[in-house]
Image (tube, rainbow, N blue to C red):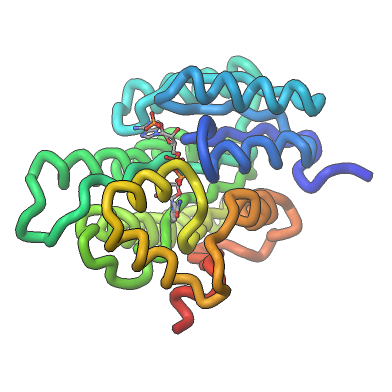
Length: 253
Ligand code: NAP
């Protein structure tokens, strides 16, 4: 049986770790050729290794998504290597330091917005024209439960993830008649290196995180990847402009 994204070409930012890594691996398993993009070259190469071991086809591109020249080069590399761009998963992100809004340094605010929000904007800015030329494409942006509700102690992160939903909806409407679907996924607390690092830094954060999932456990990166790959696939043909929680009922409370 053919995979869900058989014959498609996909790009995944933050593909070296956590949710991005599992998404890149699942896209490859479901038949896509994948450009794994990440700031961390060693981690990205490890994802490539896993994909190759499983018989998939992938390449790596080192990128800082907050830099426009680099995001342009990322999309160009995908076209040079694989000839097209069908699915873009704009997933890379950072948590930034925790603390009350008034204690946050402007430099930390600027960095979290630059990576999480401007990075998704720049990625879409350069992915959409390629998809328009093809007359088709699917973009999945990684927001968060923090894009839907308050996240005390993480004002910059929360603002960036709310912002992602705004630009996702706007771009979805702008491109609805052009064959391009644009959606966002809002994960709950997912067991990844990012979440583990936040929990290790602050026992109070660990307590909040562990209590945040009505389902009674943390989510796994693979569970988010399943939703992303479905949104990338033609099976989600009527779904665009969606903000999809994948969170064990966290924001439903
Ligand atoms: P992760 O394990 O830290 O993976 C993120 C990857 O993105 C890392 O390899 C990181 O590289 C890379 N990256 C960071 N800044 C980058 C940049 N400027 N350009 C390119 N790559 C960059 O994190 P994760 O938990 O899988 O999170 C993935 C996404 O899901 C993020 O957008 C996050 O906000 C979102 N999310 C996560 C959770 C959760 O509970 N884990 C919940 C909701 C939403 P470095 O290691 O070198 O920084």
